[in-house]
Length: 182
Image (tube, rainbow, N blue to C red; front, top):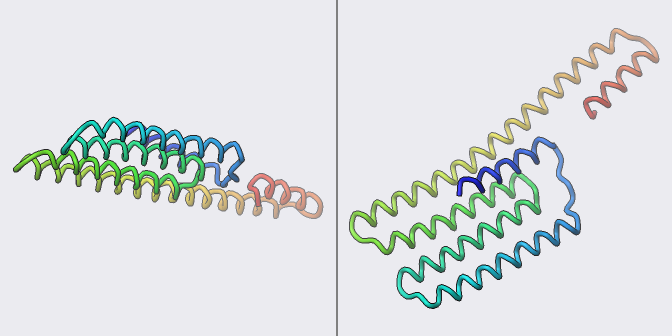
């Protein structure tokens, strides 16, 4: 479970490090649709297996199938949209699916064990949400810091160009603009 969160976080970090959003290609859209179709098919197969079970184990089985579908759908959507917001939204929805599953597992318990189980489920849910929000803020802050550093370096390069005059100064300014994409 932690590995997919790290993969989503890494994907979001790489996106923001690149500093641009790419347009979705037809291939990316096809890949996204195939992933959604596969998730739907897996969900249907899992639901069929769950129909043979009764009681709380059936509820858990159904929610396991739903959680797996949510994970597959959200990871595919995040890769397709390829934005920090999409990766964060995916992590939040996956956390909700896992929380619903954990609550169903707790329903099969009684007494204090049930209470403890519910509290642990809630704690994992809150932690997953907090991690997603914190990671988003961290990535945004790093991106902003990177932009601030580039702006400062560009101002330094522009200031160095003031030592020149005429065509040399123009050439220096052009080189600085090209280097810092201004």
